Length: 339
Ligand code: DAH
Image (cartoon, rainbow, N blue to C red; front, side, top):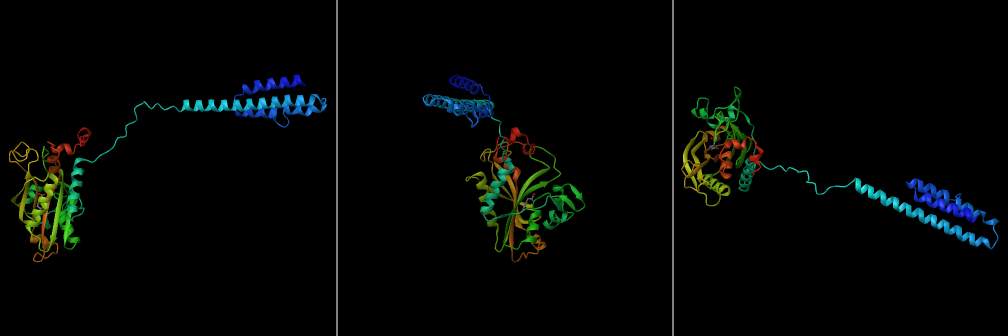
């Protein structure tokens, strides 16, 4: 019986140590230690032994059982560790490899300046309104005091989609739409894209951007216009910026002005950008013409208004010292990445 036990012990040891996986280990456990297992079977034969031999043999069998149990536990641990090792190997990440670059987008310089403008004007109590890029002749010209035969139309030729439908030449059309839809007091700006049949060069583009402003209320004067525009110019160009109001003409304002600021390139000394004058023109403005108020159903005896139209592209090129307006529209990433 001893020899038999020794044979089983050795066989079990070999089998366990060379087991390949968990299932095989489990089978061996059943085979040797299970209720019908081989070592258990030996215990059952003990009845045939003499009372003296019994405890000795019992001890040996228990020792063998414990040994096999330990081996099984040991082998299971080994297999677990090996599996983990393999998993780590398979899932290795080389953290020294350069990461895939995540490209972050950013605002186009025109939008950065526009956002600043919106901040400035909303802080002064203006609302932002929108207007259509395809306009009617009525809103783009007629109501702005520019009848069909008016010479001012020459400077604002555009693309006509139908006889009375055109790509708007100025955001001023938004003034009319606003006055038709809102009652004074009115304080709005309308930023947007405008279109003209202009030749492309360093300072002209057939598509460009304006920000229209309109204020209508009782007792509004030219002083309010000056105050708002000076404040805006200083916010955009810096505190020391001088602002110059030159008399001008627009059919929809009376009186009308054009507004210049100190050239941001040379500080007013005169350079290539300001063509030696020291000044840069940034907008047109004026007191809303009584005819325009009247055509929108607002009594010009009771209400006054001022309006302004700012060129966003010029503002952007001067602020960032961009030499050619075309760069704003070419969408060359090498250029845009600089902002
Ligand atoms: N719409 C004019 C233009 O495109 C700019 C302008 C001038 C707008 C005077 C105004 C204004 O609102 O009052 O040249």
